[in-house]
Image (cartoon, rainbow, N blue to C red; front, top):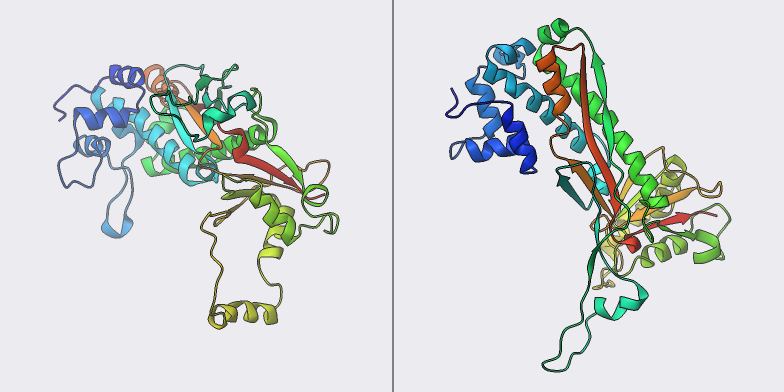
Length: 362
C-alpha cells in the first residue's frame, strides 16, 4: 500500500501548486531509480489495477470497478481519466505543432505577458551602442489589457453509474481518447481563429499578405507562384515561417510548387543532387523546413484560398486551468451520477504579433 494517504485533498493540493495530480505524486512517492513506471502508474500497480489488455500474454484489463475497491483506489480514477485526456490532446491532432508554450493557472482568468515592441520602444528591443557606465536600454514586459477567454473543451458520457463501473478500463480509454481527439480539434479551430482575428488585444491579429497584389504581380490570379511563396516566407524575418496550416485547396497549391508534377521532372529533380557540385548556403536561415499541416477549418479570405503561416516558437500560448480536467470525474465518483464529463478548461493567446501571417492567394 501507499506510504502516504491517497485522499481527494491531494487534488486540491496539486491545484494550489499549479501542477497535475501525477506531478504531485512524483514528489510524494517518486518511482524507484531505474523504474520504467511513473509514480501514478506505480500507484495503479500497488492497487492491482490493470489498465491495458495484452491478449497474447494472457493479461486482461480490469473493470472500472477496480477503482472502487477502496477509498484510496477511488482517488486514482479522476487522474486516470485526466491522463488519457491529456495524452489524446497532445497526440491526436495538429495542436502541438501550433503552440509555443503552455501555461498552467490556478483560476479562470489570465492576462498574457508580452514584450512591448511598439514604435516608441523600438530602440529598447535592439542591441545598441551604450557608452561606459550608462544604463542599457530596457525591453518592457507587460500584461495585456484584456484577459484570455477560457473555455471548456470536451464531451460528456451519459450512462448509468453501474454501466461505467462494469466496463473494461481499456474500453473506457478508447472513449476518453476519442473525446480528447475531438476536444483537440475544437481547440485547433480556436487557435486558427485567434491567428486570424487576434485574441481581443491590440496588434494580435495576423497581417494578411496578398499573393498577387503584394508579393508577385506576375502571378496567375488564384494560383500560388513560387515567387509569392518565397517572398511570403521572407516577410517573417527575423522570425521564421516554420509551420503552415492549409485547407485541401491550399495544401494542394503548396505541394504543386514544391514538388515536380510528372515522372520526367521527378527523375530530374532526384538526379540534380548528384550532378550539382556547388551549392548556395543561407547562413541567416531566411527560411527553414516548413511543417505543412492540413485542417478543413482554414477559412478563406475574401473568398480566396488562404495559408496560415507561423513561427510556432513565438506565436501562440495555451493557458490551462489546473485541475479542471479532473473535477467532473471526481464528482462522478462522489455523487454516483449518470454523466461522466471529460473536459479541459483552456484558452489561447497570441504572443508576438509578427510571428504569424496569412497568405491570401488572390
